[in-house]
Image (cartoon, rainbow, N blue to C red; front, side, top):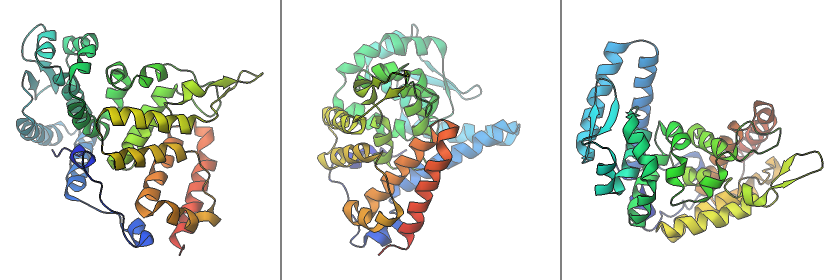
Length: 325
């Protein structure tokens, strides 16, 4: 499986000279194509499993997992291909993680990418040993974090192991369990974030990173009115600052940091249809497409009552965008 973050450690590709054409025909590099194909394959296999087709679905998935895990070469761990459980090769499980703390996030990346479960004692060890992740070189964490966020099974990993990721992004720890106190949300800040990531229709790493950070400024921006409703004035700007600080610490390329911070800062901006062409030439086709993907995923993770009007607004903007220029 390709390491998508390699691109993020170096220069970012230039935008198309024709922003409208690039928006209609997004780039399909080899890394993105192979990652998307793997994600789709795994989703198809999961669908087969849930439909009860155990022979065809399970056998095909087992072969895929064996081939992929053989290439990943994750030392210190073994997977039971019949039960789909990943466990430490030696006991107690803490020994594997102490020997190489990078294994902590490697295990999470594996679980986010493939439909496998983490064995109980290993799961407990990941929580108990999470502090050791601070010992890992930041670029090595980055190279595991990006494919983790793009994984087909990312939701369960984010919900269960947010405390582990908080070692490098402490704002996650504050967001966990933070009651939003608003009718527009049914989840706390971190669960909303996790669900938005899982609902994203794109595996573009810039989109996934923007969704990771998009609401992490909320706890610091929180205020409450006389009726007890929560407000978060300025949280997109704060979220952009958090994204910049944490991504710089993880040694992301400057252009990547700037683009993600921009997406976070703009994720609540209104997109009136009559301003479609203005937004297109302000951001360029690629970045505007990313902003739309961030906004769609964000809306889909809101309460059902809040979705219809906002989805209609985005659809109207896209319709206007198709005829812009």
